[in-house]
Image (cartoon, rainbow, N blue to C red; front, side):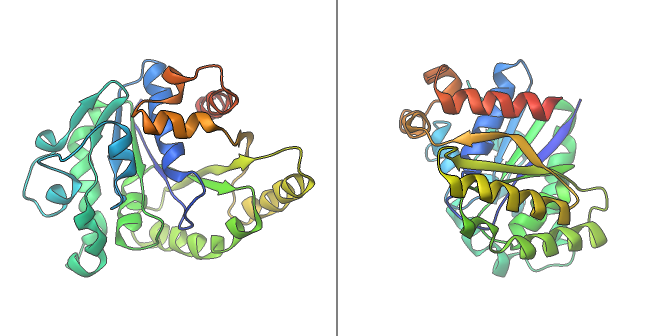
Length: 249
């Protein structure tokens, strides 16, 4: 099994990087061989996996200044190609024809080495996210349990449709994942129904699993570890385990 999954949403604060990290470390703990690619210039996922000041990053791969084997770092939570702040100017720097396929060409020789490649994207719909969708077989869209998370979903849908038309006709949306959920609040339950309607317009689903708020996430990030190792009995850890089981099934 070789699968490439992008975790994306142009809205910040919806648990995108948290979900990419939990998915990667959760699959790793199940015995799968994992590679994480940090396409977000903020590089939060790189930091969480304990990588600081790497010599080579995804930026050097985009500019053809290094080979993938030089950039890949091995950690207990899976392998990672680190992110780089230099990617903040990607939309202006990478303008040559075929720029949508740069990441796909980087990943192709690596696919047979990994069961899953997980791509974390920036909160924007620029060339980096386009590259991720072009290179991927599927994507997961984290959605905070608030009305603002629905704003901009139509723009993301437009990007997905363009990528399918011009770059990757087989791109699949695995589903919308509700994060920061509080089932005791009536508004959250109503929003879940609204998100299910939004999922239908995208020809996908809302995952049955929802991710509750949890301090265990922030603790694990601060300690540069993962929730499955640090707090295996926490509610948010149970939620992500259920989500991964649902995705695998």
